Length: 492
Image (cartoon, rainbow, N blue to C red; front, side, top):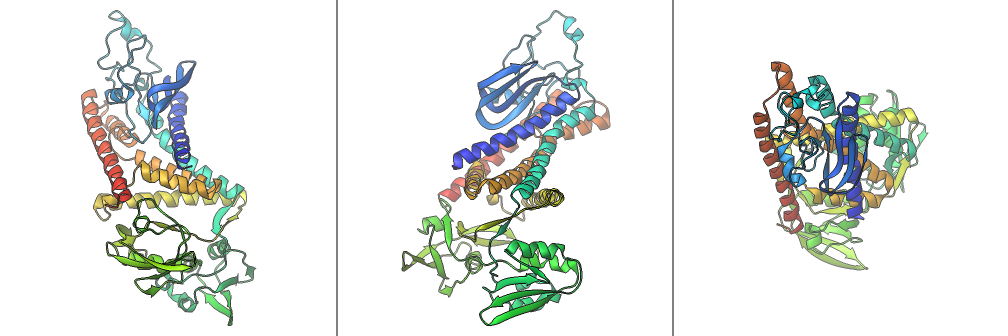
């Protein structure tokens, strides 16, 4: 399941990204010589018009080869220069990540650097180059380069909206309250700190609730004014008056979690919990002798012990046993102060409540898709900022191994969850491609911006030199991410 889910994920998103480049090139009259999903030797393909469409052997990227473009860096990946009738190397020019996204490498006249002449002197210059990439104005080339990223953003937005409209937004199918996060409560709602964990949600205002997602929706949608939130428990009904200001109610979404049993769904392979012998179906009853009632209790206890031996008491098959684990040290942003702090992580997933799908009207689904795409973009940009400034350790980077694990877990949850993960990863792909690193789309846009300012393109030699630097940077990042995953899998 994991392998299939990963291949489908990468295949779809690579196709979407490259389709953006392809359609944009056609829209401004650029000749497309090859549309490839994957790198390396051709496995299958066909030709239609001037374009060759292929599936290649290495499914870790793709490219669109446009007329008038060349890239010596990609020659190594493609297995050597392939000569066509004109003597031009048929090499990729715009591709997806991972692993790299190359760029144009021709001289200012559109001639292929290093290609042997195939026509008598004078006839090469006379050839019609009006459909070549380098013959187009800067704005047209910028449109072609940015189109792949725009397609990834558009795919994410459309996927989120369709999932919300067809299945609905995902919500936990429970009305049982977890432990209130008193530190997240707005001052006007301080009384909610008295809510006991396990109380059952009944209504908000005059609206009856069927699952926890109804509460979250109501907190975001109800107009300003006095509103009462009601819970029931064995001793009777509990009523709380919510803040009148709508802005303060939004904070209650995070302060009021739903109940999660301290029940292990699975221990990730190679994680501290896995090495300690903890497995799916185990119920956590104590950590270092302190009783655990909810999943929040367990998570909080583990986070408080990064890199420290921790005793976990659990129930399995009617018997009680204790396991010792050392939580991984992971950098995380404090939700209150915004500071980066080191917390412990055991590498386990909770066996949470069933999922309920709250179907949305078309207009609501569109707004939901937009909000999800913008929100995830902001989260990813914040993560990158923390990495660059050193506030977050590079050990938090994950490779194709992490992607594969997450793909498999999402697929196991069902089609809607898998599609939403695909949308999430599409936003990741778009933002990474926009980084101003030579050979990525963002690097190409920097070259085009320089050309627009000074009125002439960056020389082939300079582009080649910077592309080699970008290639080394990307290989280094990929090696670091892969190393992190292997260290995690082997518990180092």
